[in-house]
Image (cartoon, rainbow, N blue to C red; front, side):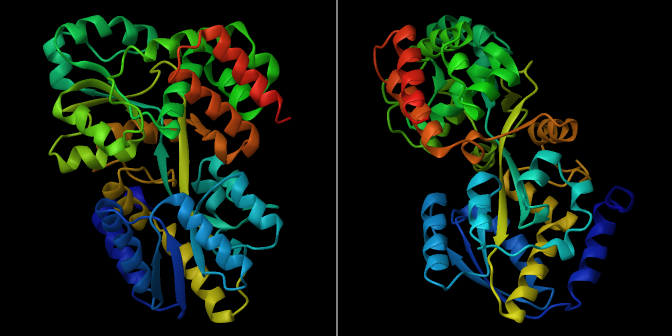
Amino acid sequence: MFNKLGVLGSVMAFALTTTTPVFAGTAEVIHWWTTGGEAAALKILVEAYEKTGNTWKDNPVAGGEAARMVARTRILGGDPPTSMQWQVGAPLMALAEEGQLNDIDEVAKDWDKLLPKVIADNAKFKGKYVTAPMSIHGHNWLWGNQAVLDDVGIAMPKTWDELIASADKIRAKGYIPLALGGQSWQEIFVFESILIDVGGRDFLTKVTYDLDDAALRSPEMLKAFETFAKVRDLVDPGSPSRDWNITGGMLISGKAAYMIMGDWLKGEFVAANKVPGKDIACEIFPAGGKTLVFGTDAFAMTAVKDPAAREAQLALAKTIMDPVVQKEFSLRKGSIPPRLDIDKTGFDACAQIAMGAAADGDLFLVPDNVTDATGIGALVDQMTTFLHSKMTPEEGMTAMADAVAATR
């Protein structure tokens, strides 16, 4: 229906459905969207929700980990919020196992047809939806400053070998090859892209989902560490502990040629009047891998008993999955909608690449939403230790495999 009506028709249809109160209640929502761009995107959801006749009670908490901790504390204290931002996957299912979530199947009857299977599967507990997916953010994006690339006379690389081979030319022109913030959550994006480059999606699965000892000690893993060791020479001395947005500024200003970062970085491009896909080139990296490592922001519904609060949850879930809300939200957030039936019109070139990957099923849910937390934590710790040391690839591989094995 969305594609047939077009944007204008859908907006009109949405206005007709959302201005008629179906439910009437208050939803207290804990979330971590507190920055300017995030708040602008969230406003789309809030306004649409309140058009249903319900009230949004805002409870923002800066930082995803802090917001989840606040929500968890409230739940354990017997005073759960109506809804809370949470990513799909294993940590959310742990709450469902404890009986802390309500299902929303009453308004989710057709969602299996609208969502990528990996998202639908990880948004359900025992076959019933317990969270409403709001956005998809890809992690393994390679961004390139087009003016820098033109000055150096190189094209965007398709593989890590090509990226590394271009480093000397980039340095000769006075640029930093790779902008990287030396924090583990930023570095894992780089490492995951190397794992895909070396062994493809299957190898990434064995290493990060299965924590397979044979894969962790394999020739492919040694090759991955050999490549990762070369990253040390691609970054500048100021890399350690630098925040992602400051690092993004290096790419935007032309100090650095490349950066690997999630597509929320596009908000920084827009703020600097840079067009994604034009001024800043983009590729899912490695380009031949066709695997988008992603996370999905969603809103889970807690196990409230009050009938009015329950009705408010259903209204919120329905609003989140409205096609116009999803589109308008993602256009402001820099994400793409989880719904597969959203028209690509208006999305930048990079977002359209991501939407194609989602439609083709080339999605890989971020490992920490799937894997044993202790095991993946050991892997990440050893990864960042290696990058900030002079360990050899053999030493790094062995240290990581041993650390993961110790958690099993």
